[in-house]
Length: 520
Image (cartoon, rainbow, N blue to C red; front, side):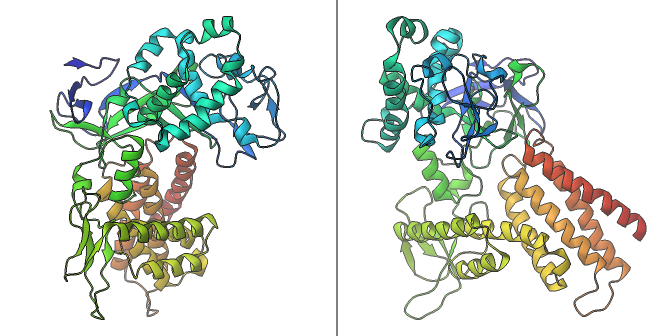
């Protein structure tokens, strides 16, 4: 047993088991806000942008830059925000890799995504730690890579081989002279780059840059933390720093009470995916099968986030719901809670996958309220009202309703209020400490607040005015929701989305306070 010891860090036990590997347990009772650990990243690098033909991240500071009109690094030709970007000479950013990338000096304006593969930069920066920082290299190579699962023929191996390993070896490393290779990459091979890809896939954390790009970073101690689909910690990254060495420092804090001896956990999947989607993602990327409390519960803590409606059999309708008999079994049958009808797991997966594509397509098209309502109505025939596909549609609808405040009848306001309350209940159950869904919760609380305030100003459905007591009840709930929204965002202010949302909410809070003074 050993301890993680850093300034201002709670001392937590590091233990290990065959099933979990290394993991953390609380050395004392921990309360929300208690610090678990904080550390600088070993190495970090950019991910590709969603539309790389139009925008790519600067290799020195990661700001999105136009691929056509943007400047290029004078040495290697990769897109940059400016030839004077400080990160171009900083070895933690572009400084060390530039020499390697300069082995292919040509610039390209067509097929940019395949020519400038930003997802290959982090593996390159990893192998360059051999010469840039041998101490970090030693720590990096101790991380789990799961190479036993990434053998030739597997999707993970073949993708890494085509898009990263061969890309780096053929375009850059093979063109280096022996002296350069010996000095900067003394130990380099396709197998070593594959190992770096495995370490990144298994351990890297995603960082959202304030201006919209994304990065991946590796941390020595944070990677020890065990996954749970109901995590008890939240992590944030320092981005507005005076000391450049503190950039992307991670801080991990407790968000719900943790008793002494209990595991300290984080989450490596999406909190609003159903159990099968989460578990499959973890198997594909982290190489383990999650057996946490939420995954083990067919109802997902009573939220029914994956549940389907039973349509009955042989013309006999049924209003029951289908749940997996054993959610930890990939081949489980789904049984109705009211009749004898069962459906197999492959049928469920096919239906849910098709519905997911429909939801994604409508949202990518910027679906109108009518389009989303039609899709909601259609999918509601087959899915439990709390299903995660319906959650996604409702979350979008609630925000669209918010833009139509002048056109909303009291019936529509009542519908929005009910929808907000339902989604808040699900969100709070799945993430009581705002570890992963703080922005979702803040949006829901804010939209509920605006609907409650509008209702307080409007007459009732029958046209009669509200009593003072009815107005008071609405405004008291509105006060609670706006305050909950503000608290929910307290750890998200390093991100542009969190800051922008807080500005909107605080403006509404001032208007609400004035209203309350008027209403006494």
